Amino acid sequence: MSPKPRVATLGSIAGRESGVLVVLLVVFGALTLLSDDFLTANNLANLARQVSIYGIIAIGQLLVILTGGIDLSTGSILGLSGAVTAQLIVDGVPIVPAIALGLLIGAVLGLFTGFVVTRFKLPPFIATLGMLGIARGIVLVITNANTVQGLPDSFQQLANGTVFGVPNLLILFVLIAAAAAFVLRRTVFGRYVYAVGSNAEAARLAGVPVRLVTVCVYVIAGLLSAVGGILLTSRLGAGVPTAGTGFELQAIAACVIGGASLSGARGSAIGAACGALLIGVLNNGGNLLAVNSFSLQIAIGALILVAVAFDQLNNRAAAKE
Image (cartoon, rainbow, N blue to C red; front, side, top):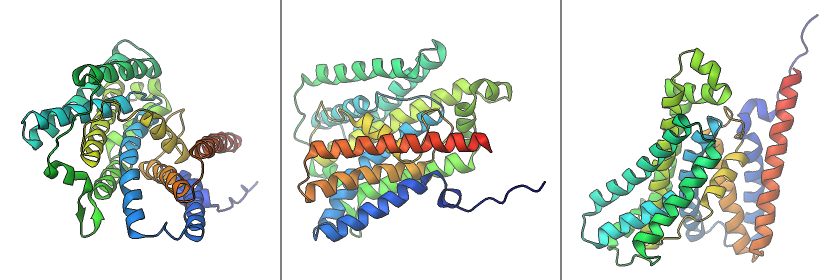
């Protein structure tokens, strides 16, 4: 009996990102028609800067999700790294060493989280929830809950500057997303990440260094959170100790909307980037159209539920084939 011919669909052609791409195009087109300010250069530049920070954090979150974990500490690590970098600069430390130390903080906290998850077998939800409280508490203690001000213009140009009219933040975001996409698709480490998320025990028996891969994704997530924190501090021109509150939820939402499965092993850097862009476009368009911010939260929440339901339907359809 000959197999049934498979019908080509958008999902089979464009992958798991197809859904968010369609929604993104529809929303983008609708906002273009509804608001004369949406396609202006200033608005698009502001949108790019807003989305870029969320997107960078979402890339790190994606790596953790692909291994079947989750990282609730990204927002707190962002706030800590940004505030510490700001304090060091204000205290007279040169900008480059201060940034390096801020990045190191993110990587070390990610390393600690990964160690706790792999060595003590704590569920990622619990381990990162604990780190969320630790990092947020540390930044509030060292800053005494005060905003760190007095940052030089040269540091603020890092996030607010442009290259040939293109915001620096957007360039960094595209480079990080492209690098993550290459690593996940074209390297051994990327294959290991998907293997761990698919079946950690089977991956271990196949020779995959499961513990090392797991620790590495948390280190990368912490490092990218620190990158986001430093860029946000540069953009605001101040180190805000409460910065990043709720960002972890935005990052998770971007990944899920972009096609990532919380069960692990399914998702892509491009999907996470598109998910972050969609959330940013919705928030930006809502502001331009004077839509109530609470209504936007409802819309984004509903979008997450639809994305998860769509993923479950795809999984069931694949299981029947």
